[in-house]
Image (cartoon, rainbow, N blue to C red; front, side):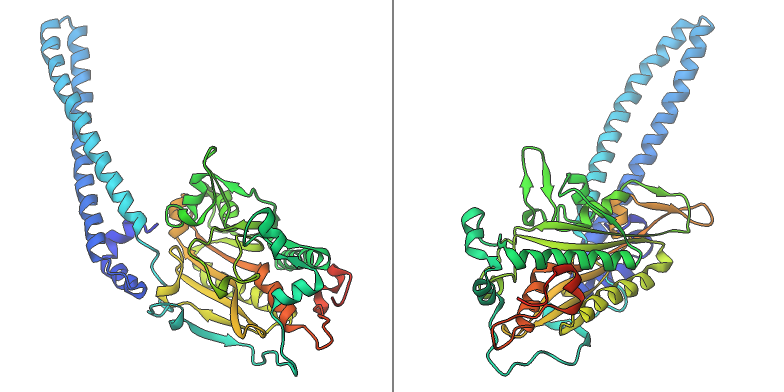
Amino acid sequence: MLELSRLRSQKEEIIQALTKRNLAAREIIERILNLDTEWRSLKQRLDGVLEESNTLAKTIGGLFKEGKHGEGSLLKAKTVSLKEQEAQLKLAAEEKEKEMHQLLLILPNTPCAEVKQGKDLNDNEVVFQKKSTTSFPFSPKPHWDLSKEKGIIDFELGVKVSGAGFPFYRGKGAKLQRALVSFFLDEANEAGYEEYQAPLLVNEASGFGTGQLPDKEGQMYHAVLDNLFLIPTAEVPITNIFRDELIPTSEFSFKLCGYTPCFRREAGSYGKDVRGLNRLHQFDKVEIVRVEHPDNTSKALDEMVAHVQQLLEKLDLPYRILRLCGGDMGFASAMTYDFEVHSSAQNKWLEVSSVSRFDTFQSNRLRLRFKDADKKTRLCHTLNGSALALPRILAALLENNQHQDGSISIPEVLHKYTGFEKI
């Protein structure tokens, strides 16, 4: 959530920045600022009434002590009127504050200066691409055909037990999944990320804190009876570790990671782009999360991008990195890099990671603060990224490492985890 203090001091800059998202925000921002002015005026009047009430109470108490009951009783009647004013002003201030808060929730984060204006994914910038993509002397098969032939992923069984988008992984398919998770976690540990095993259901406050609620409520599975939500990513529980925390120093850098299953309704998704592992309702992912001093955010983002990049290099997959335009960025993001791997059989790029900085947008919702060198309270910066999401990585590994004899090679870096070199 954007800070009200920023809207007061940087109104024009924020309005201009939000045009990168193709959002005309002037009307809503001016409405917020008008509500803020009205709210502060009401609060000032309320403070005046409370001060007058307190002074009057002391005067009445003194008169009764002096035995001046008549004068005290006359003044006591005035307190009834002040109490009525107090109640009216409180109600009016609460209504203004509630309306202002609801409007603030509508505003997305402001993009960083490096982010370009654009309408959708077609306007994203390719900032790096590994030169070689896999070529075959035969017609490569898509991963859903390979999976069926080898008996390593059973999509039909998943439909029977749960529905579309909930596959079963079997035999070497299950071992390959486990190998990838272990590899990603070991690499994160080597890079200094502390591993957490997080809950898979979170409360409403946690969903709000990281920006999934109310913006993505329709995409989350909701356990209505307990008002808990299945996590769409480990970002939610791990970042919420810091909710309502005050870090007592300006010298800090928190690096956390976690493996979890992720659950997404993917409402509205259909067609060829959802076939096989391309889009699932349940999938596994290793997430990296950072909480940083604002001065360290750019460096932290670069380090996270480099971390994901080296994972793809070690897996020897063809990939590219895109910096998303304003129109394709997530609601809470200030800047996002997407990683895509190339699917040879499908002849398309598949997104496998998003690495984003959120600056103070999440921490404002989370009330995540620190004490700077001058002992002033400031908001921390948060970042996160997939390192990595498994379904499309697995799809790319199967498709890009297939051979004419029908076998599939396993990247060397995974051999110690799988116990086998090919399927």
